[in-house]
Length: 105
Image (cartoon, rainbow, N blue to C red; front, side, top):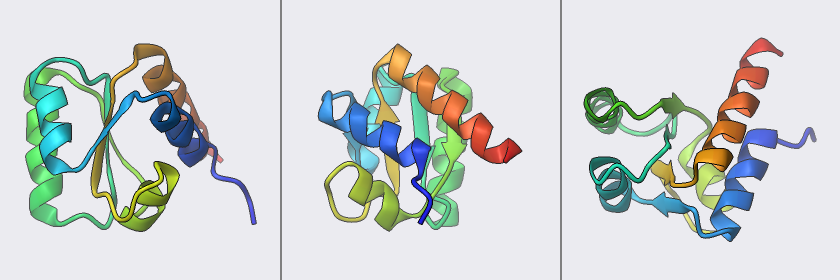
């Protein structure tokens, strides 16, 4: 099994305490300008995806649709999570680089 570098970085960010997870916390971090990257599970509801897409556009926060609820939750040591926000600029940039690498592979 190939290790998922994006989920590994999300796990590192979570251990550093730089991840807000769940719909309410993710929304709060985006609206208070503390989020540097929002990640939404690909299997999240269409409504959730559209809501965060619009919110991130408005607050100028990068957004990525990646993984599924179970793998994102597992990466941060929780159960299912449809949305997370990374609240550290350096970690968010690293995750974005890993996301770009996975789309080119």
